Amino acid sequence: KDLRSHTSITMSERPSDETVKFAKKLAATDAAVREKALSNLQGWIRKQKKPKRMAMLKLWKGLFYCMWMSDKRPVQHELAVALADLLHELPNNVARLAYFSAALETLVREWPGLDFLRMSKFFDLLKQVERAMLEELQRSGWDEELMVQYLAALSGVGYGERAWSIFTNAAESLFPLLRELLAVDGSAPIPLPLSVLERFLAPVLHVMANSTVAAVRKKCAAHLCTEFLDEDDEGELIYREQLLELREVVYKKASARDGVHEDCRGSLVTLYRTIDRELKRREREERMAEEEEEEEEAAAQREQERAEEAAEKATRSVGNKRKRKSKGGSSGAQEKRRRVSEGDADGEAEEEAEEAAEEAGEEAGEGSAGGQRRGRAKNKA
Image (cartoon, rainbow, N blue to C red; front, side, top):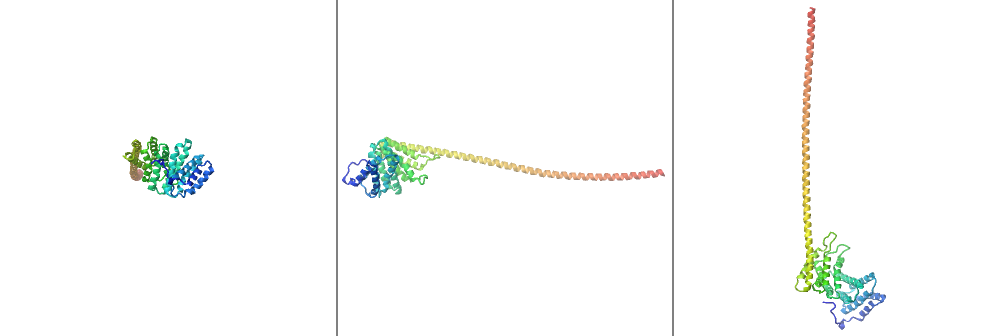
């Protein structure tokens, strides 16, 4: 339902005089008056247990023009954070939801009157209000009923042709804010449960399925693709499981018979094909990488086996050489011993022959001496 569809105001819905006074002071041209009104507003807003819709709209009209009057970017950002944090000061979920819905309805109503110089600070205001809403959902433990109410209010912005850029910027900020909220001490964000993620996807896909503004559908699809196809430093998908879930949700939405405008179905089909094509491409790349890795492992294994076989052959060759050397050394020693023994035998034979020759010579000498004596005796005779 369009948040701008309420036209009649009953007496019970009329804001109180106190609310009107706050709104006037918040929209004052004097900065001191606005600052004093803001400081008093925090105490007043804590007492609003069951605020009326028109009271919240009147209050937010004053807050809108308080933001309008602010100058300088740091001051504007500080004011946007302060206005969004008033959501936490409200005493219960009913009051917080009324404050959040009134903020969106006010932005939708006043958006056509903004010039491009002021749009940036109101985009920042929208982002901070959205951040405060997500913080409340996190504190509630992502309560199912509360998520449905907040996200229904957010998706209601996406149907107006006059302020559709509000929703596209809200959708663009939604998941980055979730990542910042779920990151602990600068670490990687904790993944949302898929059931919670599907809840956050619902308003974006619902607007894509029913918005008659083609630019809204195109920007939502581009944002979802950019957000969930984000890669880490190694080129891996950060939100692979979430992307798989997104593909299934988009397929169900695109194939549903009810709840989808026929002029919008093509946008959902295109989004599904884009996601499916990207996932299949990555699956092929992963398979190819796995096959290459297996081939490299097999080549390394074969190389290792060849190296082991070569080492084994070298070991056997060295062993054979040592055996031959050892065998050759033992036979050489035996030959040497044989030669030495043969040399000793020859020496002994030579010594014996020399002794025999000496004995024969002595005997021959003695015989010749005896013959000479006998010959001298005979001559003498």
